[in-house]
Structures are given as C-alpha cells and as structure tokens.
Image (cartoon, rainbow, N blue to C red; front, side, top):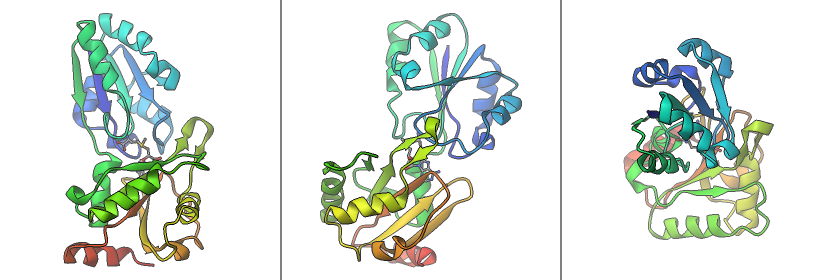
Length: 242
Ligand SMILES: C[S@@+](CC[C@H](N)C(=O)[O-])C[C@H]1O[C@@H](n2cnc3c(N)ncnc32)[C@H](O)[C@@H]1O
C-alpha cells in the first residue's frame, strides 16, 4: 500500500491526523524534500510519528522503483510538503501503483495554491500559475502568462524556483527585477507572500517600492492581481499595503 500524504505548508505540526495515523502503519516513510521548503528539522517529524524518515531527492522520486518495490510488500508513506498534487508532478506514483496492482491512498493538505486565499483575492479568479526559474535570462513564458491573465481579468500566482537541498531560493526581489527587465511596468502593484501557513508576511505595493525592501522569510511567492477587483478584494488588499 502506498500512502501519498501532503504534510502542509510549514512544519511538522501541519500534518493531518489522518496523515499521522497512516504513517504509523508504515514500514517505510519517505519525504520528498526538493520541491518546497520544510521550515523545521526533519527530526521533529520523526519524533512526532516515531519513524525514521528517508529523504527522497528528485532522482529517487523520478526513478520511483525503490518506493514502488517497497510498496509491493509493505505499507509505505510518501510525504510531500504542501499538497501532493499541487505544483508538483507526483501523479506518476498513482499510475505506477495501478500498473503494479498496489493499493494507494491520497491524504490531502493545504497548498500554496489554496493558501493565497489569505490575501483576499478570490481563488476562482486566478488564471494560469507561472513560475520563474533561477536561470531566467531568455525565459518569456511567465511574462506571456501574466499578460494573458491580465487581459482575461485574472490574478497571476508566480511561484519561484528553489533548491532546498542547497538552501537556495529565488527571492521575490530577484523575481521582481526579472519582471521589470521583461517589460512589466515598475508601477504595477503586486503582492509578495512569504512563508504562508507559518509566520506569514504579506505585502502589497508597486514593484518599484518593493524593490527597495528585503524579504527574509522563505518560501516566497508573488501575485499580480487582476486590474478588475471586487470591492472586498480591494478592501482586503489594503490591509497589506506598504
Ligand atoms: C513547487 S511549489 C510546491 C508546491 C507544494 N506542493 C504545495 O502544495 O504548496 C514551491 C514554490 O511554491 C511557493 N510556496 C510554497 N510554499 C509557500 C509558502 N508557504 N509561502 C509562500 N510561497 C510558497 C514558493 O514560490 C515555492 O518556491
């Protein structure tokens, strides 16, 4: 049996009771630790569930054989920071389980994709999500996505590249510089959301103003709101104005 368990956005206390109960039944517990930042020491999660946690890097996940082979014989948990299927590509495990006649169960949790509701922007008015990579010299897709969303009166969530194994995170400031360099006007008002679900910081201002500040909590995301806001969205955005 393979349990695919979202462990939430921040630390060991974000796991659900269902997730914790499932882990307790497992012989092997893997933590996928390269697509988001776990804001605590893995030892705390080990202590909470009383299990050894095996770290699964991209190579182990993409070549899923070890995990699938163990799940053929034992209960196995595969833990993902945030939600299992949000802004990650783990659906392959469901397909592999089907092919190998292994039972699987998904236990969901909060994701950056739902946490942005805290800004006051309506979730169903978000258009396509985009991401800015570290090496963005010739990358145009985020700009095309932002412009398309603006044209459709939709908000844009921009997630930022990260390399947690080397403690490297693309900062919102670096991402804003990329946006300005690629024709997004400096007076565009955007939100920077840092460490949602943990010790969150949400700020809202023009890019040129935000570029003067430094944001130290990670992970970070940027939102470009639609030009057409509901009055409740406008009222809530004002809470974050700097
Ligand atoms: C590949 S996505 C991971 C998605 C994860 N599975 C989820 O459901 O949230 C990682 C990116 O999402 C954004 N992100 C994730 N958690 C965040 C948080 N708590 N606060 C702000 N941004 C976050 C950051 O831009 C980060 O680099």
